[in-house]
Image (cartoon, rainbow, N blue to C red; front, side, top):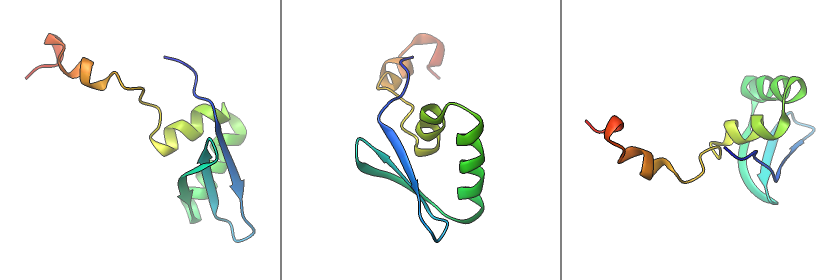
Length: 73
């Protein structure tokens, strides 16, 4: 899986964290979720954490995987 890139975040004075992807809003976090996100970003790979928190970590192969015989039901 390719490494995610293009994510950034800003922490506003009121504690709200705004995550952007290529300068477009991708998510807004408030309260306890914002604090949890900030702790994860500071301790790990920031790009991967932001991709996971925004749900942008899937790269288009989900449809192909769904049709695989192992995943049919």
